[in-house]
Length: 382
Image (cartoon, rainbow, N blue to C red):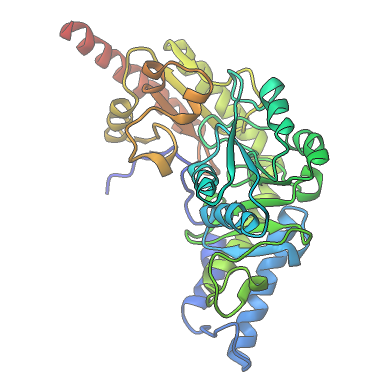
């Protein structure tokens, strides 16, 4: 079977074999409902407790601060909507480069009398300067700024932003979905009140995530019912996925020290290669994830290039996988002031634990051939 080399690790990751092994018993002979009082239920509850401790340890939190969800999108919605439901309508401020699962629920709060404020970023995609100060001057009740952008890989200085926001008394949330496993993540050191995670970004299963929540923050549940997850996420727990999530977090956090330098070296090879082909690499002046390169080749359509690369054996992306159905240019790049014609040419390469130097070299060689072919076709059409 034809299998392109996988260079889209920011979209999702293959299941870690150790994670699969940990999950398998809970897909067969271990099947208890964690709310049941008999042995089968007690085993399931113990497995969830162990997974909760592993997730907490991976991000420097206490197990009681971890609320399991179906993924990063639900975790982000739980914070934004859940916090707003127990506050008087005020201002919610989110960065202009947030994932749609933060941006859209924040916008929806306007129906409940809230004011929505988008925090502009600079040309590198960083929250700073007058736009950030203006957001704080609005005295927001809720703030959300992502730790690492899923498209550009740009890192925000969350500890500094959280400290500067403290006088506003706002609840500060960060989407750390893309950061875990690629750099150290410490809930306490970040200084935030809430942090979102997703299993499938770190070698875990699809359909599991968590909101790490400071106990001082009160939320209204999105799903009411039996009162699972501190009464914040009712429903019978997906034990297999939660177990896998715990193991995935533990393994991903344990790999960071060795993996980050290796991925950074591969990233630098990719960047040098695409620049040699005339590409513009976005956010090169900012601190970024060690595995992510977002670039555009002038005059070439990103979707077209991604399709040709796929057929040639290299799986990459034209932007966020969660927004792939949207034909519009990347909202992240537009927020950075990138021209729409350039933004439409964007291609994202994201590397992971199985990526090799040979994968990178083959990708660059193929990209050079395809870029030349497409430019020749464009020239002939003119």
